[in-house]
Amino acid sequence: MPDIAAVKAALAGQRIETPSWGYGNSGTRFKVFAQAGVPRTPFEKLDDAAQVHAFTGVAPKVSLHIPWDRVEDYAALAAYAKERGLELGAINSNTFQDDDYKLGSVCHPDAKVRRKSVDHLLECVDIMDATGSTDLKLWFADGTNYPGQDDVVGRQDRLAEALAEVYARLGDEQRLLLEYKFFEPAFYTTDVPDWGTSYAHCLKLGPKAQVVVDTGHHAPGTNIEFIVAFLLREGKLGGFDFNSRFYADDDLMVGSADPFQLFRIMHEVAKNGGLDAAMNVAFMLDQCHNIEAKIPAVIRSVMNVQEATAKALLVDLDALRDAQRAGDVLAANAVLMDAYNTDVRPLLRELRQEQGLAPDPVAAYRDSGRQERIAAERVGGEQAGWGA
Image 1: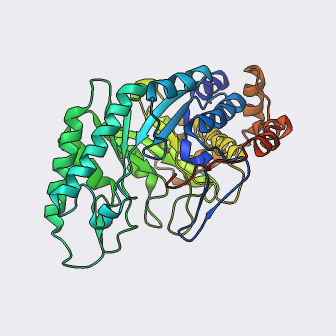
Image 2: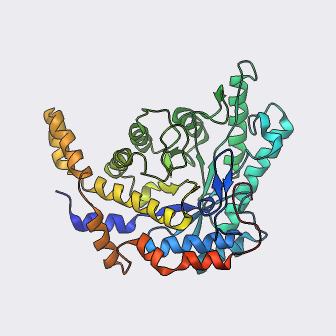
Image 3: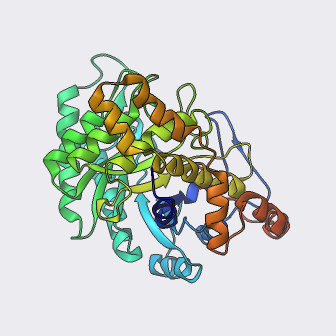
């Protein structure tokens, strides 16, 4: 049986990175919805992220998105984060919100557009240098809408050339994390549509290039935990973008649509060493909170990851392996189901109290009155959001 003290230690050491854009306004492709109290600057986003960390104890890193989080002095932004018990995490590039990128960015047929997009990626590495970030996260909306629109192999050549230039610019402690998405916004071909494409490019680039698994970026029925296990085995799993999907997009809160899938993913992570600090797997949220309040939604998302992780750590691996070796299919499945069906909330409440935290972070934040205060104080100016 799992050692509860060891389970608690693993949970206490877990780190979950929150996204700066998760604190801003967002919406659908039709409408961005405004909420009272939303941050107006990257500094106010960090103030909100600090609340998530204060109430959960496991969210000290914040991902930035450029240009949404562009400031004049990135060292000052990093210092501001440190004063609030935070550090700046992955730097996310943006090569999809400019008219020049209508036909792509790094894969565009026009060399001038490709140069512009690569220069932006290099700017992101400069920002990494200034903030102390070690992760450059790349997602490309590049693709085509019609057969014959562009040369498929030619676009892969352009992608490889751009990635190689950016990779060469990385420092010794920095890495490139390449995300994939099997469709959207391109409707015919996507230039990085799946984990295999990302893996192939990262393998060619070298050890500082790894794959990001966004849990919402897969076709229905895809066995994401197999992908995770394979990439861990190969040493190429750089991190996650945690979220949840039901139909085709990926912006629901992690664990909200299919918590059993999240458990299965975290089982492969825990079983294959993905929680070990030496593996350097980044557990990042990538979500937009369109209709729910931002800070409590991020807190709840962190808790969802914690709960799935706790259940994964409770899997009796000895019993599981015995059943697998014996070919006892039902017994092996029952071991997993026993862990999944365990109510881990009392364990997590106990752990939080041992850490001096409130046992229910969402309720504690609600009772703090901060949501009402920021709604009253953050009046005027331009709220942060997509494109802002």
